[in-house]
Length: 280
Image (cartoon, rainbow, N blue to C red; front, top):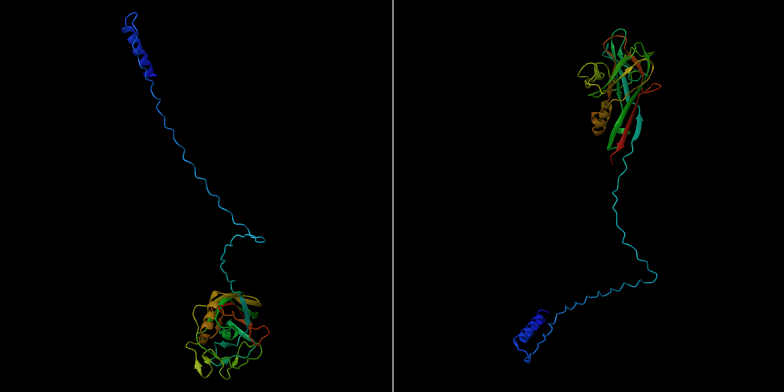
């Protein structure tokens, strides 16, 4: 448009320059060639080649791969078993005489009599022979039946013996409270085995700390179940040669505290109940 306008102005100037009646000179009008406008050529878009799907085999069902889950195996806790046994030997030792015993009697005594003399009972249980090897002791209960006493409630302690002793065959008569002269190798207040071996201390060799204690009052059955008994039995299982049993000591702080219990020869013998689990 700009170039065309410029041509018209040039023609007008020529007309004005010519006089009247003069012919206009020949003017060559140059028509500008159109400028070619480049046209962008679109790049063809690549067409994705379709991927053929696998042809399923007739009668075959495609299944997903199973994920393997590992479940840890948990072993059940070991079952607790129980065994009850009676003493392999028991006896009473009497303070007033070095030769009094009652290994074969029906009764055991602990405490002091009306004359102020002490009685102590001895108990031995063959725990190694009653339980299998390689076990863990869970609980222990010592049960004894008491049928005669003049005193009210009084503590009766169970101590672990530290030396061996012999029951013998001495058997007192009557109510058995006075004992009888020792025969054979019966244990007495002074002797572990009469006429053969003495206690290190009169009245028995035992651990000063009791393994169990309970108050004993009127007639009836009494239990001792302290953890000390469990420890004693476990140690005897681990090392049978250390099993010398227990000594039963009543209240010796005053007279008239003696209690009479049934022995293994009596109607209701002492019973040791042991709960345990096998470790193998």
